Length: 328
Ligand code: BTX
Image 1: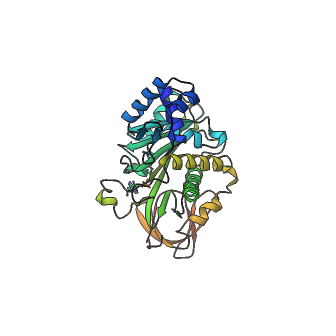
Image 2: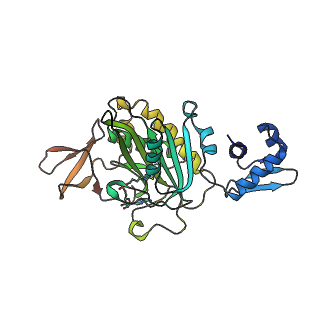
């Protein structure tokens, strides 16, 4: 870890508190001059660090920049060695994760970004990913035997995002099958799971799990075409929770479910939060639109619907539409 990284990690762990230059130097076994240089570099990178004579340095609680240094200390012990790679801006964290895996097939870890210039949704759609207001991350996973069912991973991720939000705030997010998280009737998070084939074995060798959360309202608002759909976890700039904390808790919760995915036990947590169950939904199949009632989530994360003629059918892929009410 570089001197700058050490200083950042120390300051992140003492956000809002004053830390003297001497304490930093002693605690990190570096010189006062190195501390001063590191502070200046961090300020140039956008960290708001207040300096007061006799008090030392204080990382302002207003600062909310994504970094490996802030996330790693918040990971549960078993995950502390996971690589976290943070970018200020990137085309797409899923694309970057794929490039990393192409270079190093053994890579396991998380790519996070402040902004995406080509944020991707499913089926070639765009995921609007402006700077400073969202959390965009991709987890690089090595699926274990039999675990190439992308729906299980997507549904586990949806539960993990809800659990992380519930743990850190008093908000109660809900899930719209299969990959969307809603709060107060608006979509605040989307999940995109992609597999990379291992050419030798012909199986999925790596899974890229992309998660995008609208953390706070974007300064320039959402584009008009999604203003009626998109919502945010927080309205304006909040200082009680950082995106780093949310990222760390999503990672912690996801890995704790992932370790036990085959048991499918997490699916009950999914069902509890899935607000479409019991509702009329519409879905498309071979370009035809069907109406049905959402009945259940099966053990593979598929959506069971009752067709108007009473027949049950399981949808495993695609998108459903549902009329939203203000309470959802
Ligand atoms: P999706 O195809 O289910 O949703 C995309 C649709 O959601 C868009 O067509 C639009 O209507 C709406 N939408 C676009 N941007 C937003 C937004 N910011 N908030 C709410 N609604 C929006 C969802 O795909 C999967 C999204 C995954 C995003 C992550 S971010 C990290 C990773 N990298 C990457 O490129 N994608 C994933």
